[in-house]
Length: 403
Ligand SMILES: [Zn+2]
Image 1 (tube, helix red, strand yellow):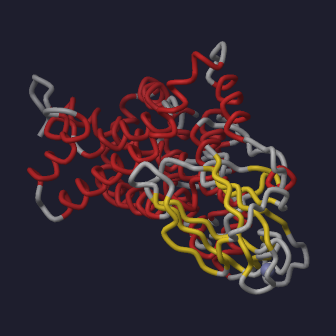
Image 2 (cartoon, protein in one colour):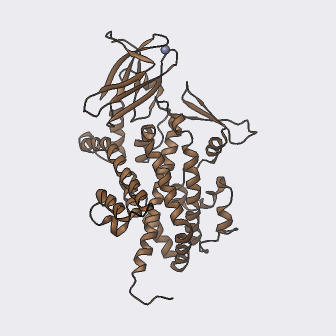
Image 3 (cartoon, protein in one colour):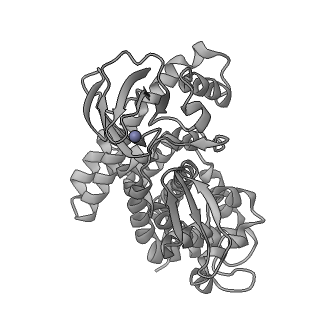
């Protein structure tokens, strides 16, 4: 549904009409600019009672004429559109998106997707509740409230799930539910089958030095992402369905400042996960888990983060699963070599201090890249679960142990 709202700019008195895509969040917040003088404006809608109420606005007033022939600006928290479409008064992106989903999910026609598409829209609140429960369970676990933590997990995943499998199980369920199965089970199994003795040595190292920190890392990144989900949401439908970035994609909202550091934090976490993925790769290549071709895993873990993905180039699965790993963007954010052009809603950045090569990126693409790296970080939650599960199962092996 699109709601049409004629407004007057408080700065230049220009009158234009907003066409607002009504989503399913209880509160819908938009930041945008006057079409003529580019002054920032905000509009907050309250949808909690099932009707569209304007909660607050700034930089504008509501126009009381009929406003039938005004210029229009499309606002959405659900879709990335292109700039031309955003000004087209007859543009209805939800129809286009439904058609893309039909194609993506291999469904025959509009009728067969109807119910599913609506449930996808409603899913947003479910995703946030689901994440909220897991995140709270992890916090409770961290302060030693194991019983309460299990109860939280059982609240979303059913009886006994928390006690039997734990937080890592919930994390993996979350990933599969939200993003689909990335295929990590088969990959971990394949690595185990390649050399189970080497794999067990790897498990000892992993449980002693890696496990706790990487769990903390995943929770820290996903907490940050879902805390700011309203800003990441426009790209989410594409990220969730593993789709390409839409051509000339453009976001109407201007939230970059709120999430400007996020990619760099996510990149840091991913570079640490890469150490574990590299250990898998070593085993699969017939080496000890901690030996790369020329250096050992310790030296690798301290090496330049920008080059950490290079050793995975011959493993299609690992290389694809780490596709979003942009060290140039990370460096630019980390060192402040990035500028946000608020009029174009785009970014310009360089990758080193003295460089005169500038890269351009739209804010829409930035949000998309943030979404993809988050999906890949979240997938590591399944790796954590499969590794823990192997350890749990083998703790109950009914035979004499070496001591
Ligand atoms: Zn104006």
